Image 1: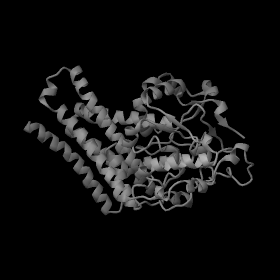
Image 2 (image 1 turned 180 degrees about the vertical axis):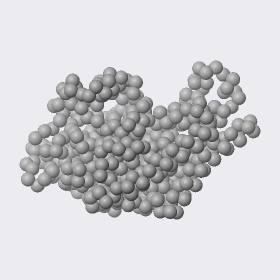
Image 3 (image 1 turned 45 degrees about the vertical axis):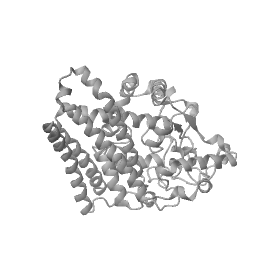
Amino acid sequence: MISTLLTFKRRFASFCIVFCLLSELVKCGAFTFHPSSHSSPNLQTALSVATVNVPAPPTKSPVIDPSGEKGLNENQPQLPEEQEMPTLGKLRKMLPKESFQVETATSVFYFLVDLAAVVSSIGFLDLVVTSDKYHSFPWWEQAMLVAPLQVLAGFAMWCMWCIGHDAGHNTVSTKAWVNNIVGEIAHSVCCLTPFHPWKKSHLQHHLNHNHLTNDFSHQWFIREEKDNLHLIFKLSYETRNFQLPLLYMVYLLLGVPDGGHVFFYGRMWEGESMKEKRRGAISVAISMATAGSLWMQMGTADFAVVCMMPWLVLSFWLFMVTYLQHHSEDGKLYTDDTWTFIRGAFETVDRDYGKWINRMSHHMMDGHVVHHLFFNKVPHYRLEEATLALQEGLEKEGLSQIYKRVDTYDFTQEIVKQFNDNWFFIDEKQVVRK
């Protein structure tokens, strides 16, 4: 028992090494955001919590009119259905003023709760795996013994990932350094997801949601053009049922479709300065230091069982939630001629996974529409109230039909069915063209 505790202490020390690295980076000012020289003024404004209007994307993307009243330019004729869409200002007035209040103490409380859940669940799993009793079992009994603990630890990591998601939107605090510290610990350390590269690509997703070609994080293919796909994508489609736990790793390492989050290449890094890449490299270094130190202390077998299997559970949760938020039977995609910020936001879907899963996941699933409308304004602990207010406001205006909400209590079956049936395909009739 004493040797087991000593082993755990050595492995826990790995976390301490990374935390010390974080503290030194803070002292040297590494977490102060410096917009790249290639970023537009509007994109710089997007990263400020105090911004009033949803900002325009970088010059590589179509220019947004946040009001939703116009398309890509003032001369574009409105589509008939476009006239029914409310402006962002009108939608904002539907929500309580408290929805936009970011409280650092409240955010940090949730962060500490999830941090405790991750450390304790991973720590207990490590104690089990390093015990003499565990090693006395045959391999299949070992697998059955740790599987529930791996699922629990992976769900704790998912909840922590949601906190890091808030940090990426600057809704943990009004202070940038707090958001960056929380984001680095939540994502780079606990979830082995380099925080700054993820934050960079995720912002582009919000600025271009449900745009056929400009949306980040989502690969869209027209079903009728299936035969024209590259051989690699055809192979991916044929093996889709085996990919669910691995797709997040593909996203981070291979950079499909946004660009690499560990190795810096692809469209998200085009034209970026070395300063911006160095900031991304800090997050990568923290993730690699965390993984490397744990791997060295644990060894390959224990590292795989204690860390990587829960990480795959996190990966499954993340892909499932993200996919179902942006796929529905009546979902639409837009082109340069028809897309507006408001129309794209209302093609996202609120999904109810059950009261307690919604709460533990910080309303990532059932408050997604409000999140897309005000992605750098409403913290996770305001989403539930804000969503109810949005529903009531739209009903009073006779606009309930533009809001999507689906009860998804059988979420694991739903993601398997949807991904098997549709993969990343969308029918041509779902694409709104001019």
